[in-house]
Length: 178
Image (cartoon, rainbow, N blue to C red; front, side, top):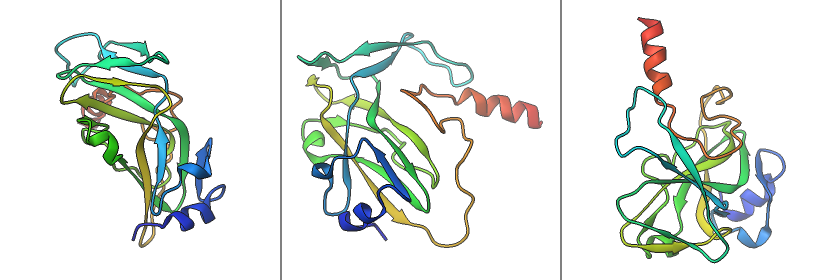
């Protein structure tokens, strides 16, 4: 089941941490998260899953930044979240989607125990000007049935900023296990 907004509010500061927290961003069954003022873009046109890919940081100025179709932008939420006992999920806001902006390609599913900032996999279907601090996505929480081991030391746990893909570590782990 999905937690209601009132239930999210009841668990804030205990099983659900959102910092900073603003009650005005609470919805009937989710909480709106905002975009930080930085984006990351990959430097090379061709990416390789087996190695780290070079990337650069772009600042989103207060007057806005024009995003172009056909390019992946990695952003992050301004809010730090941590969850214990619930599965966090992330979706774009419908107002953002109606502008042709997607905030995640595949990574909308969080693990119970995740702690950090959410990296957003942003792409647009037509040119779009974005601004820092905009409520861009919403986090919601599922209950969890049964015993579980919380996510405590994965490659994206306890991050402090935008995270480029670390899929290359999966190849390293497979090689070491062979």
